[in-house]
Length: 269
Image (cartoon, rainbow, N blue to C red; front, side, top):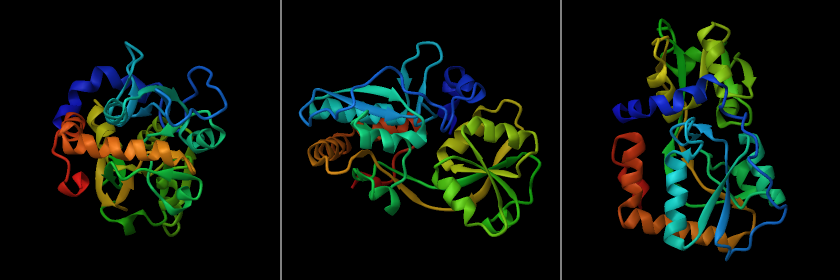
């Protein structure tokens, strides 16, 4: 992903200062009640430490990333503005349920378990779980090679779920993705299980070339935008806006901006 290199100066400190999965805190106070479906300002929750999906620019403090651009484009198409709230990943669904935020977009995989708690939009990204290992580790080439290994994951992630299903694996759970990667560099874990795009982004930004992605794809996953269970009006606006930006080409432009490639045709349906 050559285009990712242009974002190095803006993002690398997010990874090194611990602003990764599970470490975000709410930025400012929000009322406890959900915004009405016709509100002109929609409160968007995200853990702003998932580059290239969402992160905070270390110089301007502005929120940037694929997820940020997508939800803002949807808002523009549907006539609402967005207000980003930086919330730890494992706090996003509780924040939706309590009305602190109206929607959440944060590299969130649509799963049956999560669908019991929130409603999801149509998918806006096709992702999957992969593995990062030390650069000199050529032993992990398949999912079977993870058996019996020490695996680093972030709390509440699908990576944690997948790692716990691997036979004999010793799963170490971290509050931040940067802590997991740090332990990988120091040899405290054999591999980190996480979303493939974020893995690739991290490896591209690691200047000492001490880590690499292993040729392992554990899952294929659909990412969705979450709203409070039963908030059909807002969900419809999000789905309608997503359909509009897919049709007018704006979604494809955003996708190419952050991933340096065209979106798969099946994602544009």
